[in-house]
Image (tube, rainbow, N blue to C red; front, top):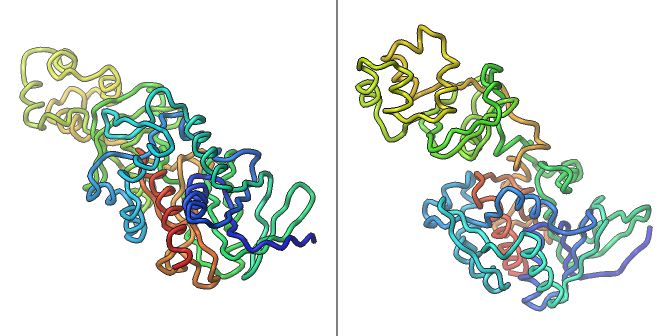
Length: 390
C-alpha cells in the first residue's frame, strides 16, 4: 500500500459541509485537502437546485431553529445562522432575494452551477486542493485509507473531517457506506430512515395523480403545516407532508393524517354555506370556491357521506388520508439518523477518535425542506472549522 506522508487537514466529502469547513480553515491559514469519491464536487448541492435553489430561509432565528429536531444542532445553527449565510454568499459575489414563502434564493442571474463555481473559485484562491474519484475505505488514529481506481493510498492527517452525507439520492454519492466502517469502530449510529418523504396511500387517491391542492393545511396529532401538496401515482408529496414526517415516524403504520381544505373558514361557516337550497356541488364550487382537485378529492367519498352536509362540513376541515408507508430512502430528499450526538464532544469531535470530526447530514439531526437542510450543512462545516483547534 502506497504511503503518502501528509500531516495536513483532510476532509472526506466535497458537499456543502465539507466545502464550508475547507473555506474557513483555509482562511485561517491552514493547508486543506479534500477527497471526494465523485468526479465532481457538490453533486447533491446541484441536484437540490433542480427543484428551486433555496439556500436558507429568512424567518426569525427563534422560530428558525425550532425546525431542527436536535438541541445540539440548534446551537450549531445559531452560531452560523441564516443571516450569516446570506452575508457569506454576498462575499462570494452571489446576490440573493427572499421569495414569497420566506425562502432565500440566489437572484435569477445565478444558476446553481454558477453558485458552486464561485465557491470553488474562492477555494482555489485559498489553496484548497480537491482530489476526485477517491473512495473512503477506512481510518485510524493517524491516517485515512482511500481507493483511487485500483490503487489504495494511506494519507496521514493532523485533523480529519468526515462530511460524507446521509443516505438519500445515492446517484449523487450519498450512499452511506461509511456507516459500516464507523460501526466497526463501535461508534453508535442511529439507523437511517426516509425523511422529507412522500407517503404511499390507498389506491383510491391514485386517480388524482398530477393534481395539486394549494393553500391547504395538513395535520397530524396537533402538528400542522399550511402549504401545497401534489397527488402522485403512489400517494402524496409536498412540503407540508415532509414537515409531518418527523411526527408520523414515531407512530406505527398505517396511520391517518388530515387535510383542511379551507383553513380560513370554520366548520360552522362551511355548514352554514352548505345549509341552503342550492345543490351541494354548486355550493362547494361557487360559494366555498374549492379547487377542482379539492372537489375531485371529495368525490372519492361515498354518496351517503357526500350528501350529508354535517359530515361533509367536518370532512372539508379534516379530510382523512390513510398513510400506508414511506418512499424508499434512495428517492427521498433527506434521511434522518446518522452518528449519534452522544459520540461527540462539543466540537463535533468523536470521543473515541480525537482529531476526527463529523459535519453535515451524516450526523443524527433532521429538518424540513425550505432551506433548513443546506443551512445546517453550512453551519456544521463552519462549526467544526472554528472548533477544530480550540
